[in-house]
Length: 97
Image 1 (cartoon, rainbow, N blue to C red):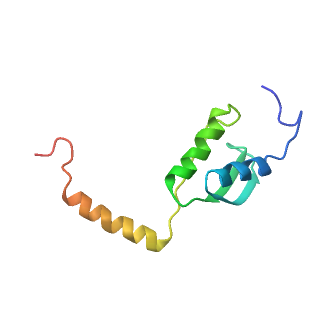
Image 2 (cartoon, rainbow, N blue to C red):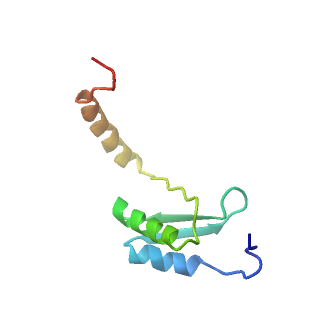
Image 3 (spheres, helix red, strand yellow):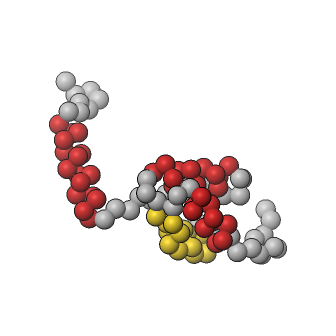
C-alpha cells in the first residue's frame, strides 16, 4: 500500500467542488487519525445530491469504505416520527398474521 505521506495533497478544494457540483455546501473538512482518514460535514437540499457526490467519489477508486449519516433538526425528526407512526399502522411485519 502506498503511503499518503509520499505525495501529500490537500483534497478539501476538490471535495468542495464535487459537493457544490452536486448541489451541496461544504461546511467542514477534517483529516482524521484512526479508522477513517477524513470527515466531511456538508449540507444538501435532498438525498439525491449527497448520493451523487458519494457515488462520484467512490467511482474514482480513490475513496473506499465510506459511511454517510443523515442529521436532522429536532423539527425535521418530529415530522419523520409522526410519519412513521402513520406508516406503522398500515404495515404488517413478516410472519405476523
